[in-house]
Length: 354
Image (cartoon, rainbow, N blue to C red; front, side, top):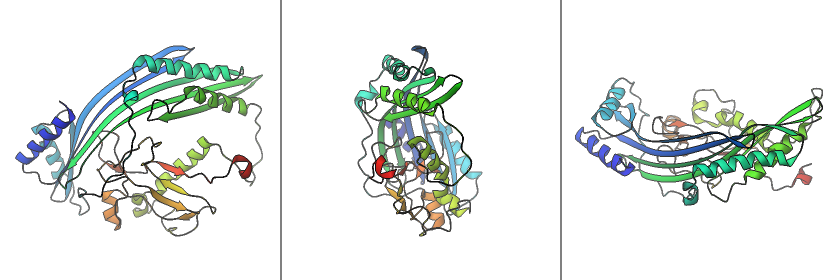
């Protein structure tokens, strides 16, 4: 059954059961992944799935169920789930929203990518790492994948949002050796578009990282200025991500909870959560509840400006949703999380920073 047919069938079933507050989430994904080893195919996999998730509200309680196809059992399971839950005044389905930002994350050429293309790119990725420097002695994993995903969200409050996305991703881990010194390097990149991903460059970066670590020495613990490359900087951001959550703030689990409006970083630091940019892996015009995506400035000039919210935690905190409900597929209830956390560039080049 096509996604549109699943929606129409579920709407008919809900009307028959007189369910007047609901959310229907349907998705279909097609994923291919190839891995290269010794410059030949090591593994190849493909997965396809589609299904429907249903949230209902009965007497202030959420119920949730999912399945491959819409039927009476799915509706009954969602209603039974609601009956078993506690009443909560913040359990609401979001209402009609402003216009959605136009976000393009789809390429018909990527959708057409087949297994052979993925195999060729994985081998090319591995080969480029070996060709970069003779000290690269091993590639632990070189993978290339293609994903195509279609989503539609319809609810009883008037939201009807749909999207289709494509994504190419390459990742590689290598080791380099010189005498008894062995170091590792990792890199990855991704793009929604066929011409946006250079696998040879990904391989070169991983190789140069490993080679650049050869001869590295430990230093004594000290305080000094430090410059981190992009992957290390991204790890620092990922450690902080949960602290920007309105849920963590409400529960007293965020160390940033009492720092709103205060300087928490050096002047010039800007941190945003922006899934509307084309480069975001989760680039979309709406979130997991159909609420419009937007650019949320969390830190500006080093000052904490705000937190992120979904519908539930926004209402709980007396705030509006910032479009930060996430769900990976139809089997998941929407949760609150950052979607594309970024440390914005200062505009200075490497020489100016140094």
